[in-house]
Length: 68
Image (cartoon, rainbow, N blue to C red):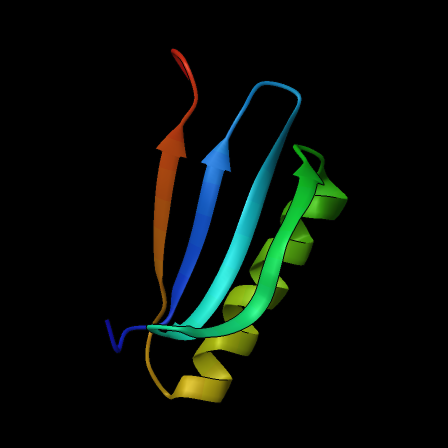
């Protein structure tokens, strides 16, 4: 995987995300975030950082917990 990725484990109240520049090159270790405007803006900032650092458009990968 040489593609930058924002990986999100989706849950009901809060979710957990991690950001990777490429395979085994973690930019942000797993961190929790709430489904609020402020925390979602933080995710957008991280996506912009991934794009800037890699020069490529990051992918977003979601893993839903339960029926989410």
